Length: 284
Image 1 (cartoon, one colour):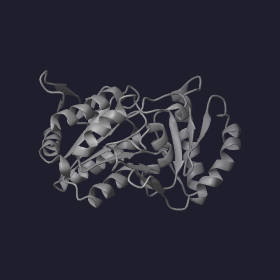
Image 2: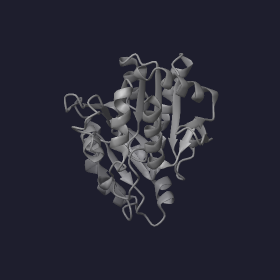
Image 3: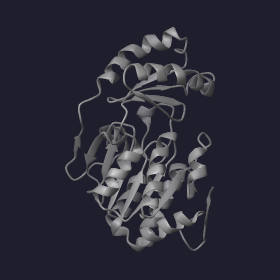
């Protein structure tokens, strides 16, 4: 799926009737709309080292222009909330006073208005897996080219640096799923990364709870990866319950599932920024 842009309109036209309804509702009552955004691959370009990931240079300005015109903007990410705030440059920005970052798939929450993170106690399985992973990868012969990312309430194994990243990714899926199950965790696959994290939280649950908390009457969600599929499903559920929604794919060549389900496909983080800017312009 895709979209097209009218030369007189900064906004793309959704390719589905449900998407067109979602955009229409957002534009008609922006003060009742929630904008939900993934971070990596959506607001920030994908880079080989996640520690180096930073928001697109124009993302914060686009968000600050749009945020005061809608009910809320929520960044929903698998990263710790504090890391997303730091890497995004979201703290203390005029216009983003009511931004919320839902980190660790909603297990953590940072509110710009207080500047604090609220979070439950970490799952004990994460510490157990963290201790076991180096030896585990070595034992199964997967140490070469893979590396472990410490995420606080989760731990991830990346294969992007392996000689054959996709083959390494596929070879690790089953062994890591077994390891996760043994410690009461689940595996969340992404773009050449497998994340071991506690069950019961995902971007869909986080988005649904936040939309309901605000009694929002429309929602836009933009993502790029497999971890965003639950949020896409949450928007589908909201639509079926009568809340219009717009699904945006931050396009890439590594994941096709989101592209196929999206109402609008934009060109990565640059396209997301253009969309946010276009919404802010249209809302005046």
